[in-house]
Image (tube, rainbow, N blue to C red; front, side, top):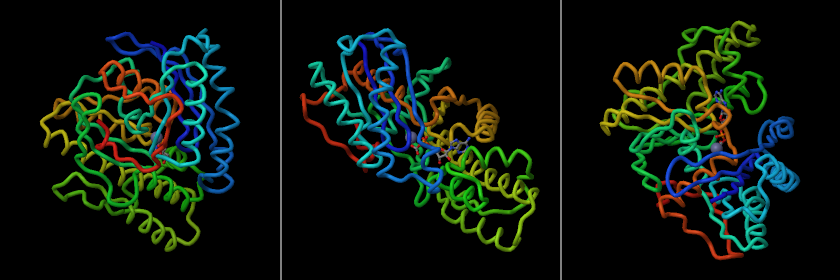
Length: 343
Ligand code: KG4
Ligand code: ZN
């Protein structure tokens, strides 16, 4: 079974080819990615219309590149998967439109995949894949959720952010520090030179006995502290970056450990762009080891948005008998879509 996956929900065009047998971990044959980060940087964030237009420009050349790299002919594709949501409506429509047109021409079925399902299954493509059941911490630019995952399509929400996502907290704090978009990687790099204890920033809901998060107060606190400093020195900016990162990591770690404790599970999967954060990984690894738990991550290149996770999720759905493929020509996208509603 050869599955082509197309991701176009936000500012990355990703295409990949995955091959799957009836059982066993699907194999990634090839993938290609174009990031629009440079294009959106001038505006300080993603401009939806520009994103859609760039997806249109990139998706077919990337598809050709993937098929060539995998030495796979168009007619050898058995299923075309695409990100159905959540994400930017116009951007999603590009991937969905191309996937459906391709499938129609090849007389193959399509499968619309939930973007977060792609993220949370992505560690199955790593050298150290997890086993079900596990707790998943999904931390991206738009989402911060803890899920209990009992198998493919068996997702229960344990807790989520009541306001900003963790990635948003990184991005907004980075913006206040004058770092570019997206700010997460830049803030994390600056934090290396700073003292994480320099500024006492809020950690909302840290001690609340639930699994919810709140990050909106953090950017306000950062704005207030920076305003007080007037013209912060390089050292103060590094201290602020380190303190912000520490506050976010503290909360993500504490709640993830609480989720393991509450569910009695010993495996944690971390997925989504913020999962690339080195400080978060170090802390989670150390704290999990202390309670005899294991943490699984996607390969670093598969932490942020990509086509491989979409093809993989489609492959695992097909293996589980859950590939509700659509009739030729029919498609829709779901800009807002709850993962717990996916079965
Ligand atoms: O999963 P993703 O690529 O896209 C969404 O679905 O949102 O996540 C992007 C988010 C951005 O907020 C970005 O700043 C953050 O992930 N991010 C990081 C790091 N790399 C990406 N945040 C902190 N540290 C990083 N190393
Ligand atoms: Zn994502």
